[in-house]
Amino acid sequence: MRILGIDPGLNKTGFSVIDMNAGSFTLITAGVFRVPKGELSSRLSHIFRCIQELAAEYHPDIAACEKVFVNVNPQSTLLLGQARGAAICSAAVAGLPVREFTPTEIKQAVTGSGRAEKPQIQAMMVRIFSLPENPQADAADAMACALTAAQTEAMTALTGAAKTSMGNARFTSRGGAKSSRRAWAARVAEMKGDKP
Image 1 (cartoon, rainbow, N blue to C red):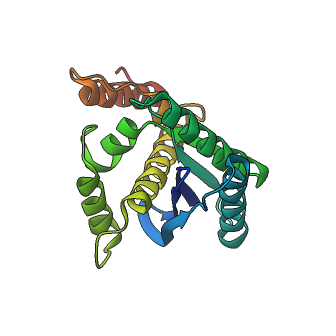
Image 2 (cartoon, rainbow, N blue to C red):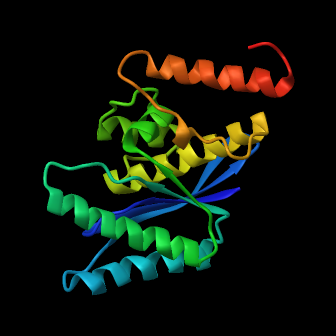
């Protein structure tokens, strides 16, 4: 399976393309494209076109995008939401199913902690993909998003529950990761016909 990871932003958008094969991951490409200054419509159009070009060049099977978090500045949150909308729409027009994950879900999936900082994400990407140096933060976030989608797809295939996704899991500050693992274990046991 090939996955296009997107970390949307109105000034710069991170992207990555990874392959998942039998539980191993290969980085095909990753980077950041800068969005030119100008009218909002032209900036959104630029994001749309860049995602279209990535989809056309690398032929991913699915796309994964980070969900918008509520920022201190409502205006910034709205603008980020529009950039995200342009990216998701572009992937959908290219015929890609789009998986969405919160920043906490992505951090939890790739580092084991929903409170991981950006340097920790970058360090994990270096380790997982054997990179010679830290990738740019936005590119690392896009890689992490794609990895989260890959892990979710693998777990979904394992359990045979097509509509189950990590995006539906809820992590709380008190034992959230353990609760999530227990829920996955119970679901796997249920699918096998065992008692959880």
